[in-house]
Length: 224
Image (tube, rainbow, N blue to C red; front, side):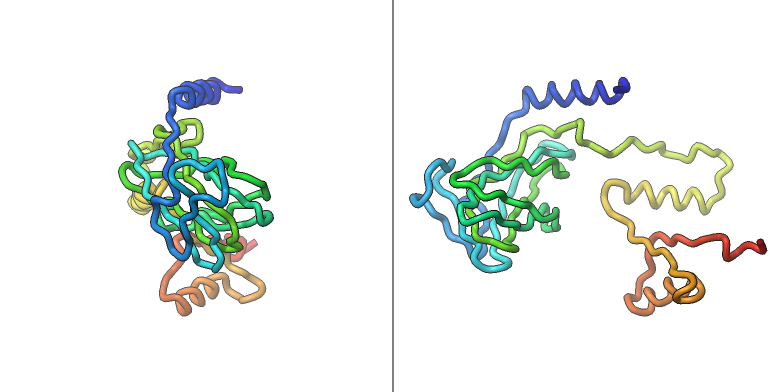
C-alpha cells in the first residue's frame, strides 16, 4: 500500500468515526403512487414507511442537505418480504442505476455505496421497476467520504509550455467538464460502413449533433 492510499484510508477511518448518520424518512418525502403505512410491519423508524410500488414509475423522493460537494455514503432501510426486487435509484433526477433488494422478513439497512452530492439541497429517490416492496428511510452520512472521492486536482495549464492553441483549447474544455459530465464518443466501423468519417456523418444526420470524442485509426492515413 503506497503512502497516498494509507493516508486516504486513515482519513476515511477518522471521518467515518465522527460522521453522523442522518435519516430522511420516506413517509416525509414526495410520494408518487405509493402509500404511507404505519402498522402492518414493525421495526421502522419515524412515523411510518411507504409501499408498495405496485406500478412501474411509482416513486418516493426525499430532499437531503449536503454540507459540501463530495461523495456521500448512502443506505436505504427497506423490507422485501414479497421476494427479491430490483428498483431504480435516482440522484438529483438522474438515474443512478438499478438496486437489488434481497428478500427479507423485516426492515434492514442496505448499503448502496457512495453517491455524489453538491453542496446544499439534493434529491434522492427510488422508482419502481419491479416494485412490490417497502421503504422506511434513506440514510446518508453528514460528511463526505474522502476515500471514495475519485476526482483529482487538475493542473491549471498543460505541462508543455509549447502546446499549440488547439491543445490548450481542448484542455480547457476537458477541465470545464471534469467531474460534471460524461463525454459521448464514437469509434468508426471501418470496413463495414466504409470510410470512418461516415459513422460521424450518419450520427450527425440522425441526431443533429456530433460526438464529443472521435476515435480513429491512423492506419488509413498511412502509405504503409
